[in-house]
Length: 65
Image 1 (spheres, rainbow, N blue to C red):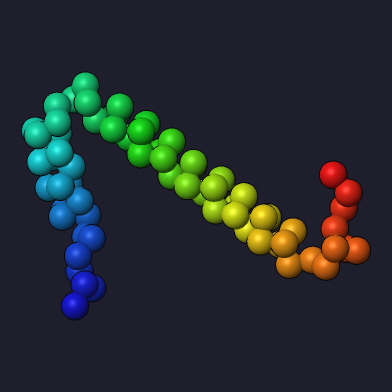
Image 2 (image 1 turned 45 degrees about the horizontal axis):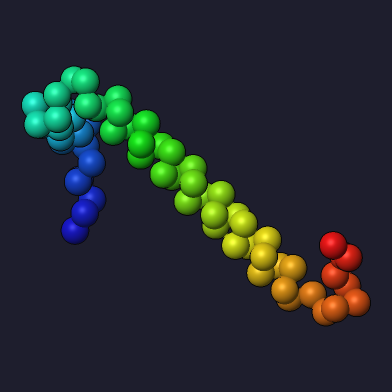
């Protein structure tokens, strides 16, 4: 169903529409904000994984703080 969705020509059309709608000055800001939000999400997920790993240990296995 979604096999040919992201072909190069489709991506160029989407990029062209985004350029027309947002303008050339807003696109770098949008990309920077998107990158920062993805990095924040990844670090939060990594932190959640560490928290879960520390709570899975029994009290005698945990490191003293």
